[in-house]
Length: 491
Image 1: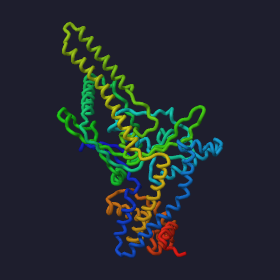
Image 2: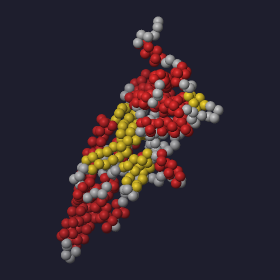
Image 3: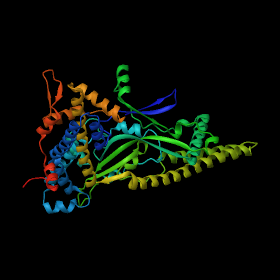
Image 4: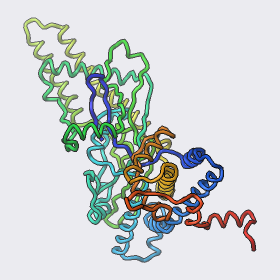
């Protein structure tokens, strides 16, 4: 993820890597592909194959998902403590079980195409402001620092964020959030801030009030122009429209303005609260959010501190008062004190102090509103509900990958792995208008495991016929159950 400014068009854009998740509902995908098949008999065989593929893949994951849910029942923040007491396990045995749970959880996250957010991604996301304009910090004293630290010590990952020992943020999918409003107070705040910056530059005091940039140096992952052009072609570019970058004037203060911010379509936060000296907390919290604006990512952080005026705000506040006081005293000591100059200085100082206070109050109200919204509108689920959702996500994605790959081989013939990857992405783009980084390796692995795809002497993949594919997979348990319900199975 990268942020950049387009100076020519005055646009601020964020570049994002395309993700492997297929953003198409499975029923729509199956029916659209089935309608592309000419013969009715082949269409019926294809629909039967889709069902058998799903039933089989679901059966593959059943035992793993059962183990995951069974382990989580021991670490559920609500009921887990009682179940652990009933098991009479030693602390060492509980440590092993919780690491096993995290191993299963991270595997499911990976299969669901969730990625761990890196420091660089978070810095780019938080480099702007959207609806949340307060500095939000995590109270690290309330978070456990051993659980995730042990896990990552045994299972190293690349590009882990600095806070990975306390909590982990998973992300998946990119969207757009637009808000249209008058933003009167925000515009006034921006105008005052720009005026204040002008006065500081004019008086050469800006170096005393300048805030140090938090953005750390980025790694140069693209070494030459060829890589840049290739990445530009593959990356998803999303525009960020902020008040800070707009040309504001007194004339457009009363006009409605639309701002725009890229969103993380899905966010999952995993953490554990710190225990006490007498009792160790074993609960693992899993929170699931949707449509979180990147610039407002702080609203999903665990154990947030109550926001207040920052030290820099206090420095500005007190500095303004001191500068104003010195200017007034200096003016009074002059032989001919200019009352208009004194009035101007006092007005500026009082206005800035009032601006700092009222801006904080307005931001505080907006923060409370965002927190309430995140609890009722943005939070999808937590704990066991999130795990069930993830398990179903894994199955849906795997089924869609297998169906698309088989359809391409069936309709377009033999293909190398690279060609198959390209053809699947083109199909998704042409038929559904969606873009994704198709996970061809996972799809081919499943097709070979099902036994309905093989390779020729040149290494190209080819599929068996539809009828033969259904024979290889065979009648599934689900089909027998459905037949039994319909009274078709003979006694």
